[in-house]
Image (cartoon, rainbow, N blue to C red):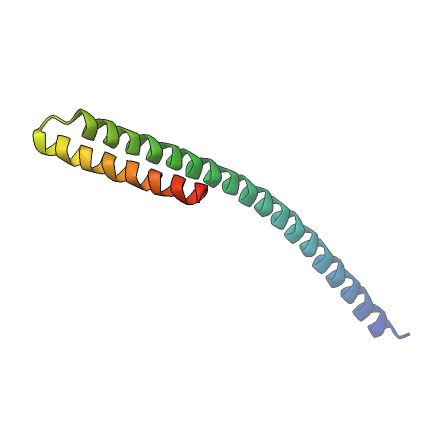
Length: 98
């Protein structure tokens, strides 16, 4: 092996080490990003659950407001909604029993 080939081999080995080092750095970044992604998924799930809870509470609040109705028109509307709900429940019960 000539001196030139030995130099080229040494340069090649250094470059391979650089590539391997870069690869390890990228693996570490990927792991950190995966961990961050998992945390964000957990946060998103918590926010979605909180949103559903608030949405349900808001629905209850609307129903309570409609039932308590401050005007006759609101009271009639609340009664109609309540009657529709009762009819729908009765249909479901009859389907389950039938």
